[in-house]
Length: 134
Image (cartoon, rainbow, N blue to C red; front, side, top):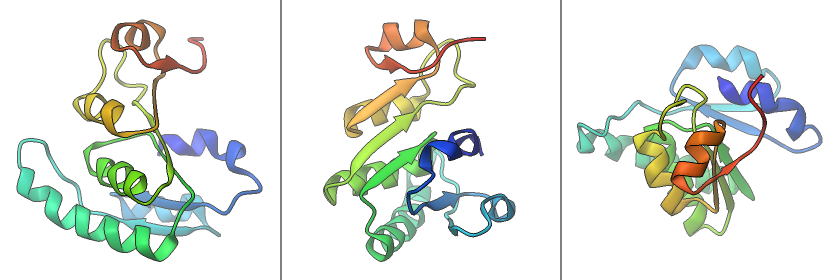
């Protein structure tokens, strides 16, 4: 759960976490936690249950912002967030050191801001890079 590294940035804000993995709930004890099913770009029908679950979560929580380190199912939250007037931030996975993920390429068209954690990838894709390589 990459967003755990950013948790100090959210201190003082009410946070809600969404993952595809039930086991992450214990890592965010004290915060509301939801799961959504996984989906694959190779099976577009797999997005229907994700979108329905995301819609229920978004309507229940009414967030002001959506921040995700991104995987395909989280695109639903970016899209719904934009439709609901939320600020949205897609952080492309640090694992994508050579090129932006397929989901990131879609997110860069949907999210208010899309960033890469790799300077070369950010420059090539026309997105911002926040941070530095250690």
